[in-house]
Image 1 (tube, rainbow over the protein chains, first blue to last red):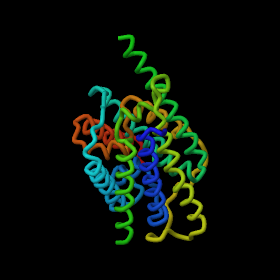
Image 2 (image 1 turned 90 degrees about the vertical axis):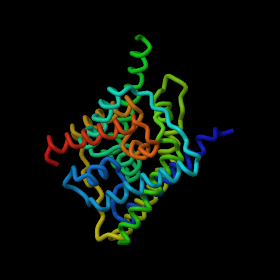
Image 3 (image 1 turned 60 degrees about the vertical axis):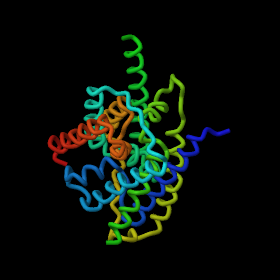
Image 4 (image 1 turned 180 degrees about the horizontal axis):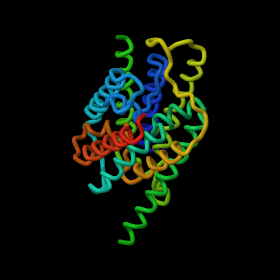
Length: 142
Length: 137
């Protein structure tokens, strides 16, 4: 018996992949959220602000619609405010320095067999796992 | 105009996919990253499911001269690994591991109205701005 949440993971993942496929074939662009965020806020010279903004507004709209259909599921964030701030800064800065995030490198980059994306994905997943491990150790010891 | 419509639809699918897969939930993501704990493979399933249509799309793209609603493709072309990529990915990974949110899920999670998400997103935007101002790119 496959756990129900894994089936939803597969369905949701397929939609993400479909989104990336559509955005590539129709608009010719990478569905990389870190890049699109920079473009939509005019914090980069690349790309097109209207396209990026419309995509991200759609992202938020789609999320809202899905939450409504699923009965407003709750999420659980346990990070404290300092961690939220530091984590956010690192994610914002790191994704720009590294030219991508889980969608840009993980979904789009790997799909076209980009060595840069394969390596970047391996690095950020490894560092994330290590970070979780260390935080767990520190919190366990405190 | 068609380009903006397809961008909108793509965004809707992406946001919907993030919620349905529960990737907007840091607990779900941290469940995958916590390899020594009660491991949850959901993120792996999401990645695999997302890669299938994406791989197919790139195969189709190879046969096209231009995208269907724009004049040209804007796909990265760099092939070499460099310090910026490695350090950037490392910093991103650390930030991601600290909270369990990355850009897409963070924006989608704004729809929960949770203050933690707002703090994270504002910090994320600050990080993007910091990069812009210190690197001129």
